[in-house]
Length: 228
Image 1 (spheres, rainbow, N blue to C red):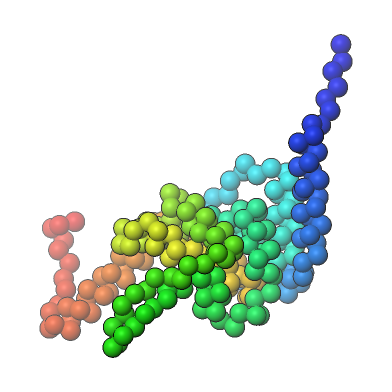
Image 2: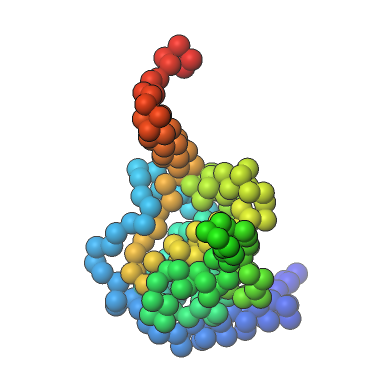
């Protein structure tokens, strides 16, 4: 006995939705030709982020279309996937020229601290309440990297320990926003350095700061080999 498999109504709706998404993306300004042959890395080291092989054929197709349109692959950024990138670009656009600096971009997103200063003293540095949909996408991306072994994940956890979870999410979203801005403006690639390299660099910065403070007080910081 032969059984014929017919696509369900939901499956057909998904296919139609994917087709409509592709049509809308194709209307975006094409930046692929603007990408230089040799691109600089925003964050690089010897280890590259492992790609997940669980993407569907539809996601891979949309990812390729996005790369052709944007000239860069924003899925290189931990926490961002095809769906979140489509939502982000739908709000932000593909041309960063309307934001003169990355600070303007972060301010538009509502991810910059709203410093209240009186007498030279910072009274408050909370971000302004915002319903910016692009910022919401970046906050979700920041939440997604909290448990990852990426450098962004290490940064998010460090901020969570210092500031608490809500402020850590905002700080990480701000950092992702800066990466997105430079990738779209300069057509640069991004390669996450990984948690190990991030922790090493953070330790080096902390040590350099301690040495500077000790020198200012007339002391010399020395390494205790017995404690290692």
